[in-house]
Image 1: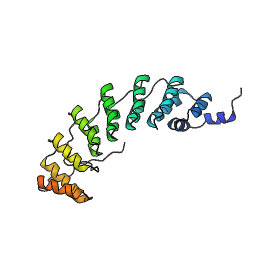
Image 2: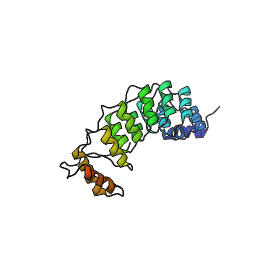
Image 3: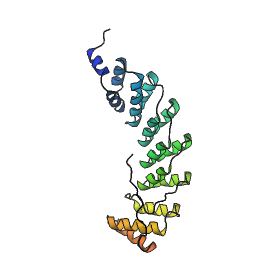
Image 4: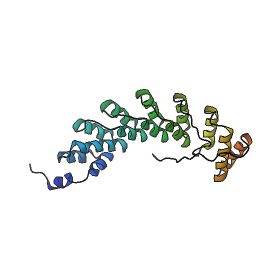
Length: 230
């Protein structure tokens, strides 16, 4: 049977077409594109895109069964970042996808506690110190507590709070109890200075509490820190 002219044109289109189809779960579109002669190299980026998209596990399964032979570490990192635990499990069991500490770091940034627990129990890579800073900075209290118990070697070392989530008071109390070495006189002073300068609603109440317990002015400049978006 002769190839349809549309198929000839599609085969010359950029691989972005495959990524869009995979991310949005359009399996018939993927099937058609592969029938038109797309290569396994194209499947590589498609599988990774599906993993970091909208939880399209059926797309992953189809690609694995029909075209795909391997996967990069980015697939697991993206699945962890988006909280797609079932995808993560599937990638772990059915592909050669590797993993790095960036997977748990990304999960911690977005507060995916169950993903972090699974990675801890089933993978050996663990996390980096960034995971603790991300969880605390974004106000993920339960996750921060879990990390403090399972990765106690990672202790933040900034001279004041590095990011101020909506539950700043809860996070400060958490730091005071669980990272007492961090919560020094200088840390309390510097944090109070930031909150006084920002003056956002309830921040003034937190600043008053810090003033009572950590009086005086900070003697050090704020540690340089750029809050990432991952």
